[in-house]
Amino acid sequence: MDLMNLDKLTDFDFECLCKDLFEKMLGVRLELFTAGSDGGTDLRYMSHTGEKIVIQCKHWMKSGRSKLIGHMLKTELPKVRKLRPTRYIVASTVDMTIPAKDKLYTSFQPYVKSPSDLFGIDEITSLIKGHPDVIRKHIRLWLNDSNVLDAAISKNIFVRSQHFADEVKGSVKTYVSTSKPWAGAKNSRLEPRLYHFGRAWSWEDNISENCRRTLCGS
Image (cartoon, rainbow, N blue to C red; front, side, top):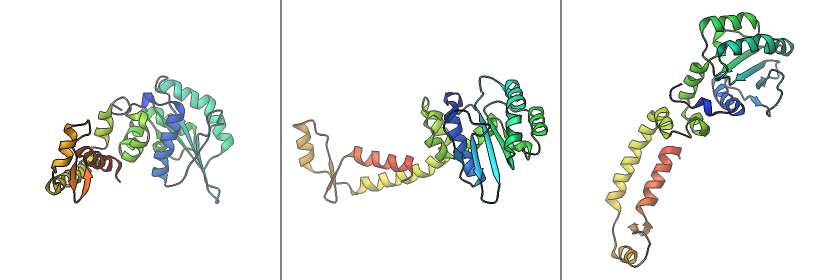
């Protein structure tokens, strides 16, 4: 929770985030619907064999746990009984305690298969941290603090950075300076350039390209 700016997400942002996370967790493609009345379904998977997974996304950070539980029992439970999913999952941005999970689990049987299908903010955050590609995709998670992105994907970046450093060292050995680019730079605002096997490159070209490959993985 301390690393992720989940409070910056809109309700629809949170649904999109959950779609990416649960597709990875469940190994299926989930349907995502436009904003509006959802009838109790934010995300859905339906198979040709009749399996129906329904995921309800509740971005209720400001409302809190007690209000969420009251809403789930009063408003969402009747909807779920009409939907009759084979599996019902709740993803929320509130702190979930054991009593809170047990209460919802008991009330939503047989649709909630396990208390572990009731996700609180700590579990959602844990899922996010396990998927650096999802972090990169959802910019609002780290838009206001680049340190969030750095910390969350530090292991991935460390490996790529080592490769980046090796490439820079190799480039330094093969670059050859010529007098013409430097002379031209004195008479204009053009930056100095170096020649690498006959091709003109700037240090900025080389470093920015390696940074792009390091961060984007391509």
